[in-house]
Length: 164
Ligand SMILES: [Zn+2]
Image (tube, rainbow, N blue to C red; front, side):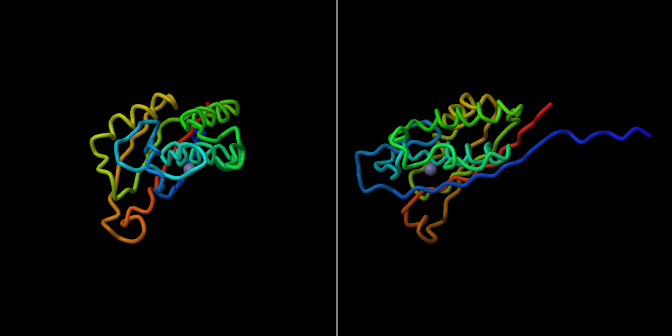
């Protein structure tokens, strides 16, 4: 009997959190989309939790560690960086090892603002950047704990890579 070889697949997971900034001039950027919230997130780059969690998932799936290993947050060249660029560079790094992204799934956990109206645009922005379908959804922390008090926003991501 012929034994079939399992497909060459790798799964990765990512997590990111940034605190809400007291600097009211900072925009809230999620998946490269500016969301009107009246507040932004604190961070060295644009603090885009969606891009950071997803890049972590993609790099992790390929065994390349996490985003911070490649784009350290004390590197002045990443100050105010557009995280879509970091995400796109992460995709290039795994592609150099022969890996392609099949799909990814991202959950944002945010008490504020209401993100349901932005999810299509965020999903589309990230999907175009990575060249694969990415579903972005949102969960409310139900007023529980620091996230429920709107002290920060979290994103979780899973990514599946394939190599022929
Ligand atoms: Zn981050």
